[in-house]
Length: 244
Image (cartoon, rainbow, N blue to C red; front, side, top):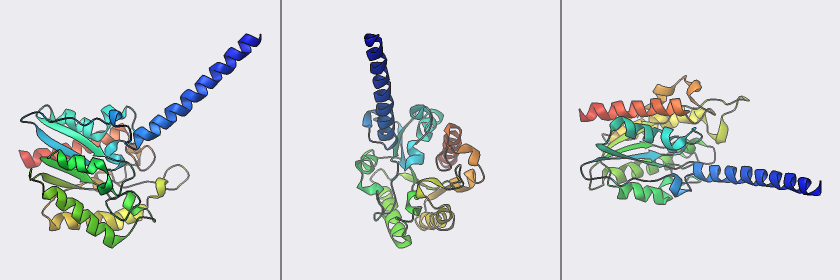
């Protein structure tokens, strides 16, 4: 009887450790901290290099089978072997250098530059909307500087400025993660559009694409696999239109 009790206790301990370990790994993975779970491909000669730059929406936070279903991965399938698409999304990051987690402070940003992309798909701003991060002047200055760094690359990339997706209330009636949906709609979207126009950059209006489509978001902020597929389809159409 004692041995059976010990076996049951041991089994429960193993199960608890597995759950805790899985949750910890999942959290690290969702924040882009496990590089082996977020591989970057080396472009082959002749391939068009596509850098998908952004936050958790680009990374694919919360998406089931994220490695296959995040939008850059789906975009790679759509574009085919003539393209090399890399996912440089990093959860929680801001365009603003004064935010709590500035994208330009990350090694992943430098890696996106070193990739020498031919195409850059840039979407940042959702995390800038948080009350602790929002500073209109800092956002404009930092987003402009970020955009100009990509435009100044020797590879002379075609840059798409993507207007952030809308956010929706989750269960309970609140928007999660401290994101302010009105700041996105009334400030970040128009400011991003203005900056892009001033630099002659192509705009992808992802806000309009997802407006009213709360069904495509798992938590009101992050697209589901179906949402990521629509995102990829929209980016694919923009690339195809320019390069035809």
